Image (cartoon, rainbow, N blue to C red; front, side, top):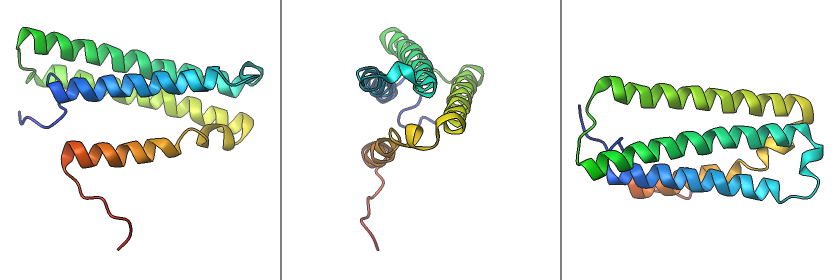
Length: 137
């Protein structure tokens, strides 16, 4: 199995999963500190979806930390496929909850938190995968 940057069991993978954990926790903190947020059911479901993301990211980071400390290599296809399948399930649940929020309260409640993710993906792609950033042309 080829070793990619950020793959499970690597230091960069651990850093990426911990940053995912902290960004999701920060998103929850910013939503919870908004006054009157619990009056809107849609926001409560958005917080629930981000909690799923926090739990999943932290569990993967713990597994990465364990592998790094034990100096083992995760090249088991079954274990790596569990990473992928779990990510698909969590992402599917989050998307379902966001779609439900859009149906109940409109797109503003969901999209208010999404522009930052595009910027973070571009920055991480630059540093992790060495992609070039373009501002046009």
